[in-house]
Length: 283
Image (cartoon, rainbow, N blue to C red):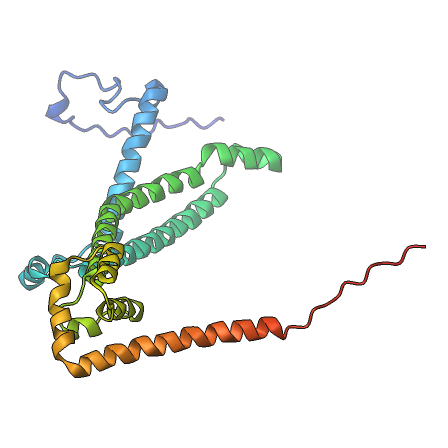
């Protein structure tokens, strides 16, 4: 006697009134998998990337909201070249930490995804090793995805730091030009004279010790000095005997040093042994 199969019990429930008058077998608004074409899949991939990036920023790039004291200090800090340099350095440190955190997160995701693919059963397990490698490269472009996200982070960093670097270079060049102009300026007092470089002091000393006005005019034309700028120090030179003696000593010391160098060069040239090149004998 063959036992009869009992029909399974069916539990019925009242449908949600929200769906009255609708066809339950039609695709949903987001699209049925069978009806998704390449364009829709591409848009879904883009939306997924946007979601992943947003989650990455929320979970791994949190920034503490500054309090009022910090914001006040930020607004009142001096607008100087050194402060701008410190700001650029701070932005770079934040970028380095963001990139380090980004690669750590992606390494964890890659490890998890690799373990899940290893444990899952797919038709690729029956393929050859070459086919498996090709399918993984085709289906899981991890390197491309990571590279795009990393380049996005790098782009945002450069968009923020490059204008600051350009401004820093401009300010630094302006400061160098101002310093050079200040150094080329003819001093009006002894204190300003002491701040000049040694070679510039010698130029001024030679001008002060010039015995004729024509020679002074020559120096002024050569170094772009104006007579009104040179007059105050010339008056100090005429009245202050100690300063005048110092100028004379400086010039004499430089002249003696130059003569010593000339003498040593001439002496070395005279006493250097000459090597006579021996010509090969011909037979």
